[in-house]
Image 1: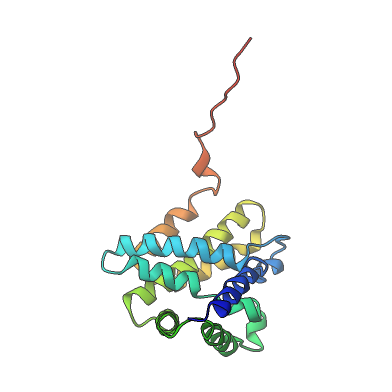
Image 2 (image 1 turned 60 degrees about the vertical axis):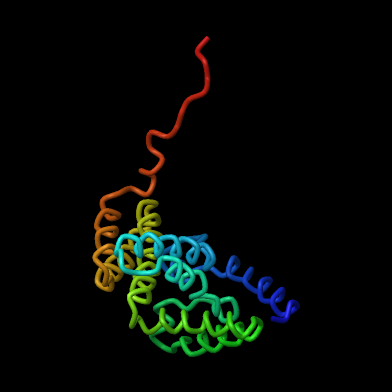
Length: 195
């Protein structure tokens, strides 16, 4: 492994914190989530889904999701509207593969295998990883919906049609009934003393 190339690769990953999910801009979201934010939560959802499904490797699913959008550091995010006119899927695959040239052969081979498994969805882990990716988008849409961006319901409806695992379907069903701020209800504790 070439240390200088590895360091450059790690610096390149920072671009994922600068790339926003561009589709949300069409819905009027002024500051959409970044690709890095999406990948982080998708990886954790993937781990949870793998545990819920019970017959998959959660660490493998998590790794797939941490790396699945790395190519977007070079090519940016493509939303579904622009994808009607051209696809940058092959460019993303090429960018990902070029990025892996910065890593040692063993890591390159392993991550390329994971990327392909995620893209092809022919393994339990690949199916779970894709469900987690979609589910994270639905959760993000629900947050924006609760904030008043009504048109994002399309994201939730499209994800609902696409999900494959029972676990992801259960999480989505419950998510639709939950306000995104429910998680902190009851956690606030007033610390003042009355005089």
